[in-house]
Length: 109
Image 1 (cartoon, rainbow, N blue to C red):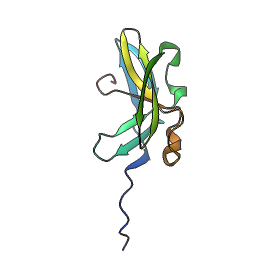
Image 2 (image 1 turned 45 degrees about the vertical axis):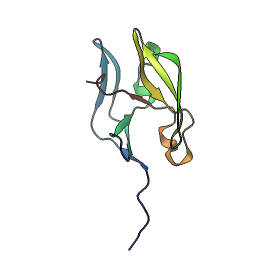
Image 3 (image 1 turned 120 degrees about the vertical axis):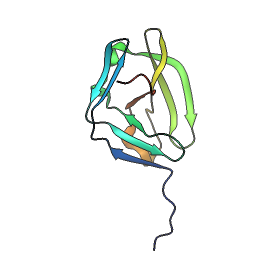
């Protein structure tokens, strides 16, 4: 029997389509998301940058730090500040999310 605790963070393929729409504008549309599951938090879908309209997003001055994931950089869309974030250099154990974007719940459709 393996008594090792479950990891705090796990990554999983996300088979369903993810679309992000704000004010009628499609900002992302993918079937290649990576779902990050972290104990105590809702699952988050990290979207490949190639499937995000980066030309419509503006880098924000906001930066946050997570001891388990690393430093996150934020992006805004028009009047909507910090609608998405990305870990450019995440911790090694979750390196697959590097450069992917995750949007706040409530802005995707």
